[in-house]
Image (cartoon, rainbow, N blue to C red; front, side):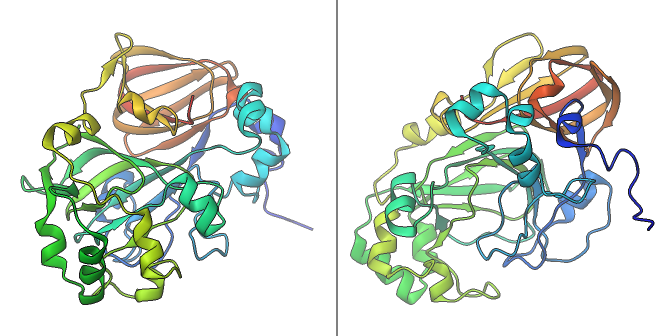
Length: 353
């Protein structure tokens, strides 16, 4: 019977891991907030809906509602999660598997906002394990690469200490103006990066397109939910009682200096490469900005590449893969060291050290 599969589709996992894998758009439908135009423009595709603001890239993580939504599906029909389980060392490397098992420990997203996101925060590892029955929480980080106008912003952290009673009153009354009124509002532009620790309240303003690295979960607790479709109090609190959910919120005062540490400048590691996030991120994930300018060496390691600008190629032991702006590519560990050639700029997202 004709299956429609090519010889390339039938290749077993060990062969798949010997070469870079091009990743197509993977946008969960009908999310609670509007967006996606920036992703469509970046990738050069049509926007399928007004509510596709996220693109799960190289994902072994499904949305919290389940159903496999969000998992990357490879050309042979398997999910990336299943392919890694079949050949964890080939995809992730022996050292990674020894430390973390067959878990990529990474979720990368493209995110584009057509409206301001709700005021929300994410549980820590300890809270997720003890209160949600999940193996990990969610620290994340942003690398902004496009903005719709000069007024682009994010808000994060409280300017003063907030009591649990006050936070509970905000939630019950959906007093959004009061919530936003005690948060730091930061202007952002392309090239800016920010680390967002678990527990820190935050908002992403409208008109931003960014690369988001995060721990591989879909766990969010919302202080604000009114006006976002499909969201009610139970969804906002992930089924928790309000008093318990607020235990995961960082209600402390953040000074401008302390916030500045989350947006510290990139760390130059070579003539072509710089580390994007503060050292505090390294235990959760890593990201590098690579500007080839002709040639840049990339060591072996499970990675997700987001090509931000230019045209070039990935030279690897088995051949050459042309790349251009808007492409996303998975580098399995077994593909070995590669060379990025051409006038190209990209972000390389990696698991924790």
